[in-house]
Length: 83
Image (cartoon, rainbow, N blue to C red):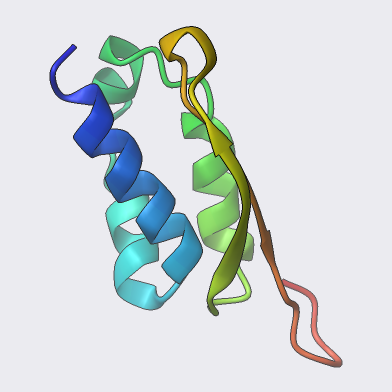
């Protein structure tokens, strides 16, 4: 699907940003589009939106074996608070 690469780039950027605008964009990703692109993480993103520390993250690994994109990210949690 021609939309997949741009979609993945935008989602990873939004997850790394984790600011209010980025989280709002992730919350608005339509379930139908996620299904069309075989995105299995759509549900967990919606949980992450509610739990995010709202700060920048770090990309630890990103790969696309056999054309399926995967990313591993982390976020620092401010002292004294849960995400």
